[in-house]
Image (cartoon, rainbow, N blue to C red):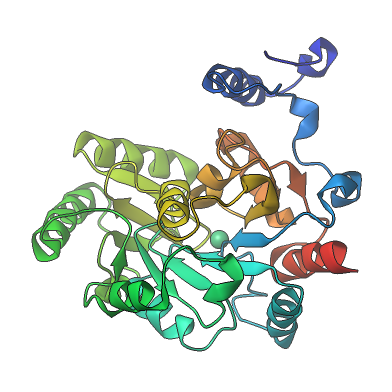
Length: 310
Ligand SMILES: [Mg+2]
């Protein structure tokens, strides 16, 4: 059942109305209503979330960072969440190479790289109440390709296909620059978003879809990727493997960019938060988070942690 207050639709961007309609159609047999009013709420209106949250799946760049860097406040946030028994899974578009290193150093349950492509368990994995044994987790983590969340066949052949799509894009957009972490990737191929406007991004997306690839982008880079690879599908697969009985009402998903959009799909993740800088993309997203922090970037993540724990 769709629950849109008609007066809200007057003067509302058409994208917003379409979003609400699509969400209603996607509900299937799940019994819940959708309201434009229920999106982008201030955190303090959601007091019923308090005391119930056991895990946070959060984007990294623009969500945990402050002006491009980690801060001492972020490490303190992770430590406070760990002490409270709340598992943190970082879900980033960054490369397998970068993320496998971070997994060794950050006090979190794990990190998912390449927008849902690969998982790296962290030292606090136990906070997710994993259904897998220590031996099973070790076996998955020791796989030389990483803990793959999607079957892609031979990786070298897959990467060659992605590179061919990129060089095809360069014929129309010769200024495209491979991202600095592209050489360390397994499942996708990335180039910098800097210098691309919305119209160019839309054309690039169409070209990628025409080449039977997926496409997404963030505040830092564009991704040519396998079809249907996204953070939600990766998180779905991870929870199925690690903690199949995990109650999603006890999970908050967090992000700031279009590549986080799948985490805001209320049919899969009923509790989602955007940091304030997400507002920049609000008219380009089909799914908007339930809540929006007042502060941007890492300050917004700290705002969420303080609100949950104080
Ligand atoms: Mg981001």
